[in-house]
Length: 415
Image (cartoon, rainbow, N blue to C red; front, side, top):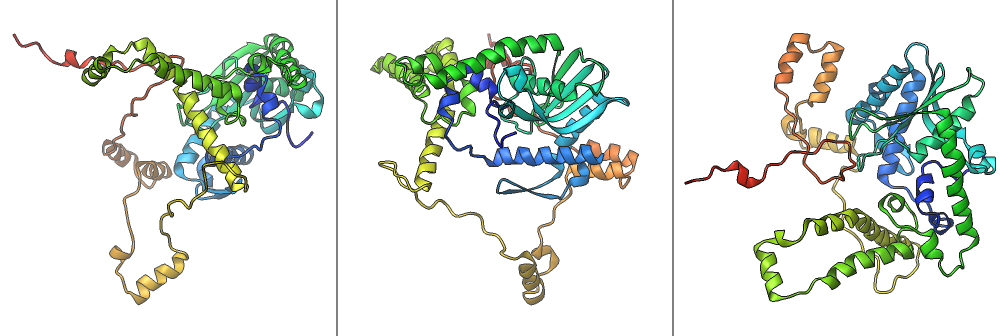
């Protein structure tokens, strides 16, 4: 297999929704962020723990080097990884077979050369006539559903191919996305093998054909209109976002049309200052639906300009300048500690910032027996936890809507 999968599972939904992205991204660098690298680090702990049959907490304190970033496994990361481990072990039961970090190939289902279509499944569980594919996501930016998920469907197809002959014929497939930083319960989607293969032969192969058509007809006059379809899902991780003509046009139409349609009059300004509620809710909704897409586009344009300037290219009207300096830190902690304690003779209470252990650490001590069962019950009474801050989400989000009473209902009418 090649070093890069042309038809990667993680990017397949993007190609299904916008075939032209397959062409626009072909020669662009695939840059990584600190958040993506952190997710890779968490995946490594998941792999180690399942392979070595240890709890995630066993790796607390370990330093991981990922794509130029360094991460220390802390209680928070270990706790989230353990949520996925618990699910995997429960799903496998006593007789299930657990395969970890498995390279799978689904090329035959897409009807493409074998080196072009492969991916890595985090966990595959084999139970009787069912195969379970688990994908661990450490991000907390947005919730991902396993239902009709192209990435999970390709992993499942590859798992079927890889596990043929290990047991009898598989009849059912369960696709699972564990995203514990958003919610502890995973997203699950169950279907038959026949249903999954039907999707592969029609929907998935159709997407491959559309991408190949986009590749061979880049000079067509209507190429942008036919093959580029901007949208939140397909644009979110697109490397061509900053230079995509269709997305730029959509942003211009969305923002420009709104400003063109607003007649600035003294009456309108006065009304807006006094009460902005005169704006129709439907207009707010239509604006909100494109806010994330436009914000992502803005960030991508800025990142592309920075990338070019760092490479020595020019961006007319802009330049690179030195940013704000980072926080001060000891160049050598041991030397600084020795000097402050032995030479300056600072007392302990002034040389060190000491603080009480966290509730998570206290719970760990309780499980280890350092805090007794009755004592832990009392300790729990001393723990408080803030509710999550309310924020706007689309109706498709699985979390229940908050019930907010209008302010007027909180007051009694005075006769």
